[in-house]
Length: 194
Image (cartoon, rainbow, N blue to C red; front, side, top):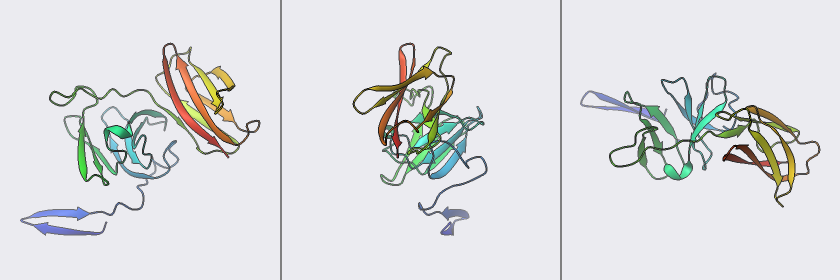
């Protein structure tokens, strides 16, 4: 906190955008390298503003598994504050555009449609050296994980039960694309092997 001010009986606290938000629940969250704020939804999920421009708000269940995310292009590719109001709207701030966003996760706002949040994939470390754990939820028992190198060659394919360890011992350094395919639905993730 950088200070407080008061006027007409109101007190405002000022905070710096630098640094990170931490807590026991946020420690060790997959897919979050620096977190700035967390909001707790009534369904038990924790929504975290983080430093990933493609998904600056991520939702985790109480086991720490990434379950949903807000795409970066919806909120200007940055978020520093998140919270839920009593009506269930997700509010977030973007320090780069100086805007606040009110997001309905189900019904939309006025004539705007609601945001459709897809199940998301996350990983325990990215980039990684020896291994990384790919995690996701909302997939059926028939889901399969596929890993491709940048030439499009499939280097791994296996059943996906919500969590899969990608071992990097036999993989050369480089960028890889991970896909979890479940019927006609596919979710993807880019991995970097050091």
